Length: 435
Image (tube, rainbow, N blue to C red):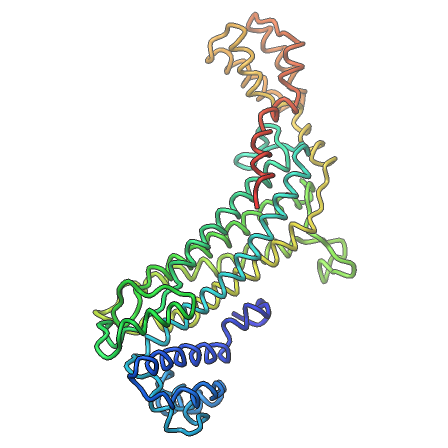
């Protein structure tokens, strides 16, 4: 991911320098376990423990010759080990993927913890915003067309629960990727005791693999990337709602617009929803990593490396992208401008058409068949659409044409927007309990 969208904490998780620190950590724990078991000399442990991680530049210089990143890392690290002979016992009984997959698990777990913390904060912001606007009347829209009365808080509540589920889904995926694999060239423990793997896993806060070939099969990592894609798309759903609400013709909500901010180089009046549009765009990038990572599940036999080049790009980009999306969405929700007066004006804009469903049911209750009630209500509604005459007036006309008398007092009640919201109390009780 480019630097523009990389936040410092998540950037560090995926930095080359941090990766080599993790590689050193894994190798040291394996070495210590071997020494405790009497497999390697005890006096090799302290020199390796004290050897600083090699720099990315040093590893790159060796890799330019070896064309093998793990060998390059081991060589560059050995160059910093005193006495150098102790480095001979590093990586004992291991294959490259023992190191790569176990260290990757640590990166995935660390990235997950950062994302879960941000997602939890966003859930709280959405919850609080929904509760603040539980009574802010607005028109609900289906197919982009006015439907029935709703509240802004109800719409935001939907996002709050979606983000809470996304967070919980990611927590479950954390367990799927938090796996240590130290079992040798094809996973048979041919040159390393399974007890070493169990010790490494416990020391690192991971689970020992139930089974592995040379690699851990990529279904868990695919689950993790898929969880990020869903979370990012929930962020997009929030942003898309605001983008619509900020349109000039709607003007119900708007993203924050800071002092000194400029909307257009040519048109000084513009306040464009650039924050929301950036969220929508970057969500595509995160979703775009799912299929390439998933295609790393089927590999040739015990392993090929067709997954490796993909994951070097896809996993950091998915994590960094989701982290930035959560950051942007938090900024959006916390700074959102809500125009409740405009919401109410828009609700009344169609002259009462949004009460057609209640009118239909009222006519049925008065004794009409559903077909006849629908025909009267729709005919009145279509006339209102074309003429702009208020719905109650066209309804009286079409009812009279069909020899029906309207109960005006009852219509006053069913055309009251607050009536549509009477049963939302339990929803907001559930929202209030979100954490």
